[in-house]
Length: 574
Image (cartoon, rainbow, N blue to C red):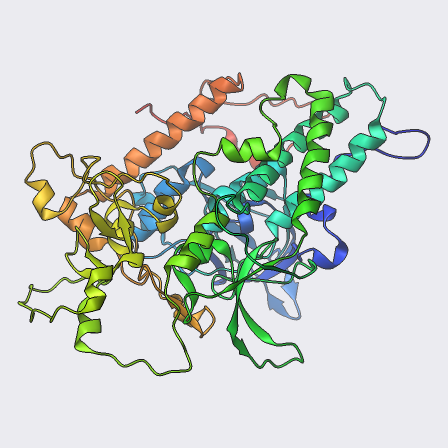
């Protein structure tokens, strides 16, 4: 489709192309393998759509005087909807985190898995399409295999990346190479230009309709991003330093790419190999969960876009949507109205409050470890027999401490979440391991209700209460020691993420298979509901008992001609 004579209006196949060339990631790769080489089980980077084609392989002929073995690759693939069940199976049964990408599962492990596994042999010319968030692994066979792989980013994969893939990668400090939030921003600019070019072109054209649909989808993601970075209207305004966006600033802890606002420590500036200073920059997500430099507080705000520029962009794009979707005016309201309807604290507001709440540690002065401080240290899994401890002498600092309802250890109040109803305190480590509640989930609530008031507390005392329905951990947490990956200046002040929740799972008497089947059932129900909402009906084909020998002019893969005597069947209904 053209606007005018020579201005094409086309939808980009990969939103990575919307980024300026210097900001794009290398997403075209060549893999050369042989018998014994493999790719461990993993998911595609940032929930992107993976594409892989085998372009060449050894064919068994004589090369350089030696006989070769035919090359191929065996793929083990799971469904996207089973990602939670796959992750739980990897951690609870195989003892590995699939986000680490360090384990190649054996055949027996795949056979015992409670989810469906697809196995396919890839030969030269075969094209493999890897769905977003679908766990898979590859085993190479023969003398030689050569494959070309590339990834595509779409509005749908960006949503999965922001909601699922990036939070998981942040926990294990895995690099974010695709700069997803920046892709959302620059894609909106590109689509806005396309829609402006379209102008008076009839919107009934399928291309224009698809561009409008993508633009609306991306605008929803951008709305979530800009809302998360909105400061509180009730707190004093903070001084914000401006640094022009170049897409190269990453979190010193999780190594995720930072789009706009972040925190930097003026005290932790060290020398670097280049002429530039080695600053300690931390993303808002990490700071909310207690990750920072050893100073903990007194960090300064930095932004890479002027806030009024982002607000102007938001309003311009909102008006473009209302031009072709006038009936959704309430859905895409002005930014202040969207903020007032949020009914929870934004991520930036959480960081503002925590900066005021958490103490500053002077790293220039050595810390003296006293018996009193040892008494306050609590966020660790204690599996041995409880020992009687010496009762510490009450000090003035105890007026600013509270006792965790679960672990019964005293903590400074800034390390505790206090219930708005009963004032019971829970340390963030116990909430994370026993209830799978991250610190941000409690901090964002204006009125937080504790597990005890919700009748789901699983501590020993509450288990004796007949009115309680003790919560069971939703998933296995193996714990990750990120000190080897994060900046050496980093600390975890709220939750010790090295600790697992295996003790809580054992206490709950939960069965791994039952837990995985429950997750798989929930995924099936969600998938079926999505099919109904989009009016999609899956046809159940009958078993294939044979084939028609006359194909006409249709080219057929010779491998398919070996179907005689075999049959395909649908999985048994549960």
